Length: 352
Image (cartoon, rainbow, N blue to C red; front, top):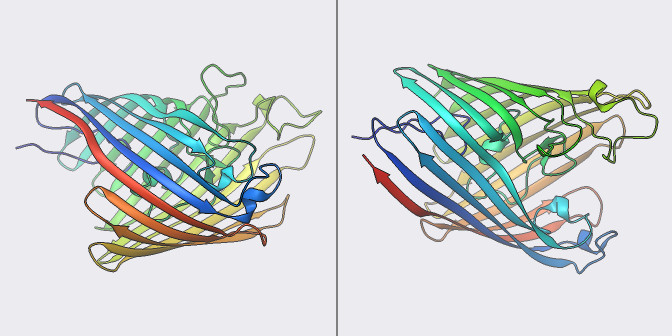
């Protein structure tokens, strides 16, 4: 009999079975269509309607009961997410979100895993749900994004330790750059950053957690590195966040609150706090509705709220169709979106 144990924080999952090895490839393909007057504004200056796609591959090679190689490779068109609506041009980009070697050990009531390679940030809880199959809405919550966000979904090079002991889970991570500005291993201005967190499962379906990160976040080519500023290595960013998840019956609720401090010398220190609450209600085996309310407050710009609503229809075991409407700051920023998500196992081979 095979036994599969899930960590809270591993995505793709470092898993262990009693014996055997194998190779597995899962994939998620999303196609989206959007209508927003924001697409007509400078610098994009395009038509109000656009379409895009995202394709994520999750290869996993289980070498033995303790060793696994896993990854997440994303190819995405631009525009696709709402953060692309205010950027110039069109194109396709590929990112290795994760790609790591994992050693895991399991015992009754506990587990530990060590990963080295390209890793998602250990800060916050949404990175576990960034796949369109797991995200009941279409956009990302505040303050997550890919570029120029306080918490990026892009990967970092480094190492991480995860541990579960009973109802408590821990994680600690050391990487080459900040979640506020992920840097390639070939880029300049890489500085050690650490992140970590812990959580407690009060009862099945109810978990609370906290996380933090700290380290230099600027590079000399960043639009936020201003003339006359001190060396990036001397300017750290510090963040703290709390999160909660609850699931019972037809309901699933998620929430996060985060506070950020970005140090400067030439200008005042930048501070921001943001949060969101999200709910999904399953109407039937095929239908659900979801909503997400978010906000941002900062000392350098006016705060704002965002509101996103979606209805989802599960056509079959592989596909989900979502229809969404997002209300964001400004009279030209509302978005109507349609998204079709297809997720399946593309290839699998196992040996015992």
